[in-house]
Length: 508
Image (tube, rainbow, N blue to C red; front, side, top):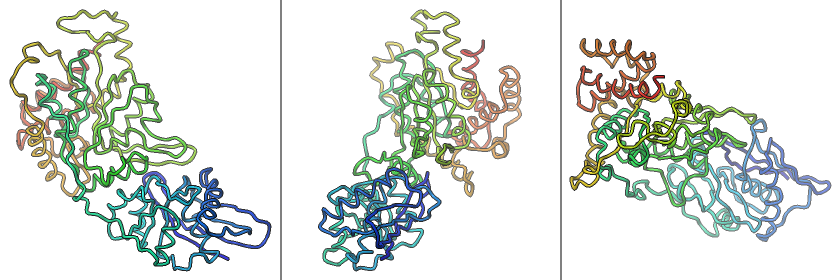
């Protein structure tokens, strides 16, 4: 007796079609699973056997061979429990219905309950692409599954419920719901809570308008973390494609919150400085996305930046330049998107008070140098904006004057982003920070005065070619904020200001 059931798998960001084949033959009772299964898939034998029996169905006493095709691709996780059970029940004639247009996804408990699993959203998108008519998914995954239209998605709680639907005894309604129906507005932190720090706010506005990375340097308690946590409130709203891609990443990583249909807010990830390089970049046995990828289309904030492991910091190099991160391990190689804004924060020295107007630094020059040398030149060169966050005096802290709100700043950011959208229409460039050197040369045309100032600064500050390009892109963003067609000397002067802080602290 032979039968097969369709399913889907995940490798990196990509989903692929799977066919589960079950063959029952005479011989000593045995249950084998082939097709390059990992340990979790092999353990399906016991889960499937117990769930079929405990749901009141007959488990065949014969030689059972299950093949999960394609056989040359490694199968991981417990997502194949349900299709294996369906293939066996079909082979034994306990399922009479035609299941050729169905796919099955889900883990089984010993009593036949269908449990949730990771990666349901990208698997459903692949099923739609493969013209599969209907997919059974775990009831726990019904919210994210409801995003996909053009395909019937049936959420089921247990095997018995699924079989009753297949036999038309009980019809399960597809779980598609309009995305806008579930969209909610969560309260966000606002820039009006931050007193003073006009220069830092201006820098973060430029960063948001052009998608630039930045590092904030200042003594403890000056508001570096407070400013960074409010950055998402001035970023443009996510497009539907961005929401879908971000939700796919969170679904694959198992980080999608319960009851969330689609991630509509830009992610803000703030890993602790003790995180490993693997936790930041991703990897492990299942090549899981790390914090860098989970910040895709959003912000990753790295507080106490020098205290991060050197390998972890250096893992930022590729994503900051390419917008993708490639993870290669024994199990294969995957590439995850990481189109993010990196925001780092650090003190100027171990005690934190070097250059403080009122407090004395207690560190030796050698200690300060060791601390700053934890941030390598190549990483610092890849960060667009260098921001000095100074202590706020009592008058500003106690002032009753209202600060500018995030909504007001966001209006200017949106206008600048709209200019960039029109500029880069028809390309894969999303903002000024993502311009290639060729595109930078095309769109960052300076006036003669601005060009002379940049030449003087390049020679005096000893800037690299990368820093030169970054100054041009920052100046382009400043000009966009002022809705200026050309890049004037004032735009270049402000851009240079945000690239010279490393000369103050790393000059030795």
